[in-house]
Amino acid sequence: MAERVIPLLDQRHVDTLALRDAPPMVATGLLGDTLGRPLRDLRISVTDRCNFRCSYCMPKEVFDKNHAYLPHAALLDFEEITRLARLFVAHGVQKLRLTGGEPLLRKNIEVLIAQLAALRTPEGAPLDITLTTNGSLLTRKAKALRDAGLRRVTVSLDGLDDAVFRGMNDVDFPVAEVLAGIEAARAVGLGPIKVNMVVKRGTNEHEILPMARHFRGTGIVLRFIEYMDVGVTNGWRMDEVLPSADVVRLIAQEMPLVALDATRPGETAERWGYADAHGRHAPELGEIGVISSVTNAFCQDCNRARLSTEGKLYLCLFASRGHDLRALLREGADDAAITSAIGAIWGQRTDRYSELRNTVGAPTQARVEMSYIGG
Ligand code: SAM
Ligand code: SF4
Ligand code: SF4
Image 1 (cartoon, helix red, strand yellow):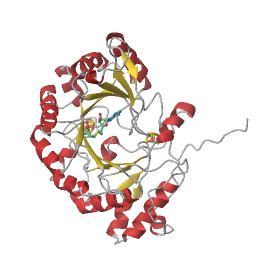
Image 2 (cartoon, helix red, strand yellow):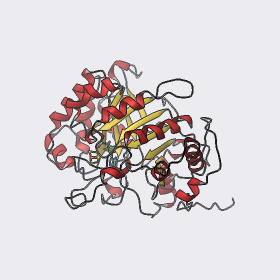
Image 3 (spheres, rainbow, N blue to C red):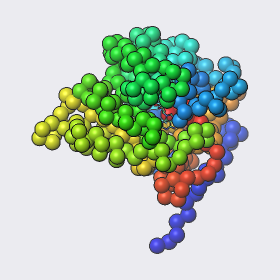
Image 4 (cartoon, rainbow, N blue to C red):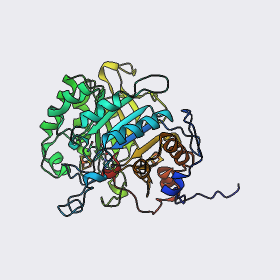
């Protein structure tokens, strides 16, 4: 077999200058990258700030009082975000996820949600708009978010044991307030609600079963996320990753599970349904998801792009550099020029970091922090 050359680093430099000169392209909704992957999902980080200090994301020692957050003028404003989102939608994006940092810390976030909720796909369909939050402000904000047009939320919660959770968020935030936030979201009809639990071996794996028992049969989908080597500040070690296969095995010993089909291509989570006595999925018991970003890469279907708080477009969670769309916006580029730039960037995309990590080892370039581009 001929030897295959695997590009370890993304050597392309589509800088602002090149973006300005991108060949004209009309959005058809059929944009594909070099591996034929469409662009369907845009994750928008609305702030780089957070009121938690989860050790796997914004460790206290690094994100301390001396850390320089972005000044307000550097952030994309709501009109800029909405304009870019509209142009991405014309290229085929159907799903928007607001993230951060902690997105509910962005002032008047509901105003942005109302603007995004008014967008339509070329076929006239509303977008699937969601938001990932640590839940700390949800009790206060759930109704305003729903009224603004948000459909659903994903809430992060790493355990039910108060001491474990307070330790992981590292700001002593209690479990009960996050659970109250989830309840508030449910009460105003934000659903289906998903709960994300990052599993760190040696830290919270004993919380897997209590979390599964707690959310089984509630209509809330609990998803277990493998601890990832995002960024460079969290001191990631492979031996702290608990493979999703172990999570599924552990739960299935007590609460039998059956594999479910993916709901759509490019879905990050593998779905498992709780089974009835006959080994068939019992919909009333619900399902769990596992996101195996480390042990089972899903790059071949990856249709996600990420827009950072200051308007840089990242094509992979593990990318080392982004493409500066804010510069184009603020230079006065028209919609046609920005549409062409987005088309050129995605058209040249080669990213498949997780697959490479599992075949040839982790590429070694500097990586962007999760709190900067969101999950
Ligand atoms: N602050 C919000 C929250 O925590 O939900 C939104 C932003 S947070 C960066 C988005 C998601 O990324 C959360 O579910 C969080 O648990 C997850 N995350 C952060 N760092 C991670 C890591 N190193 N490995 C796996 N998941 C991580
Ligand atoms: Fe904040 Fe979310 Fe990161 Fe935790 S995971 S530090 S809540 S941004
Ligand atoms: Fe997508 Fe990059 Fe994750 Fe692969 S590693 S699934 S390309 S974000």
